[in-house]
Length: 122
Image (cartoon, helix red, strand yellow):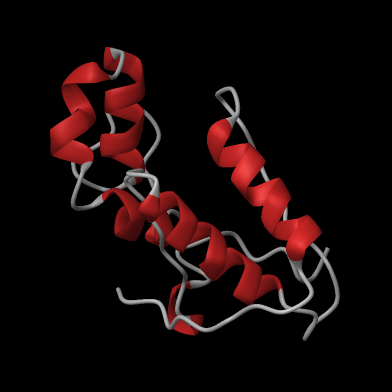
């Protein structure tokens, strides 16, 4: 997916944090938090571009509104093209958990429901 590119003005401290994360030790996490409209998506897109420029493989997925009630739908979108490539590097229990969560195999224990429980009335 091509990310539109344009000049980002006035966000140098945030961009430096992104670059430091990409150059720093692993594992690392970056949380982009704030009110709507402050530029989180712009910074996210800049981080993706910076990672790709640095040679990182970037996996990205976002749930469509219809998928928000489906458990693991985004995980399936995110891992769908690469799971077979990396599956042999996973511990058997991790591989099995992903296969069951992504509905690639049947569970031999508790049946997996593809939808999330309704928690709105609690």
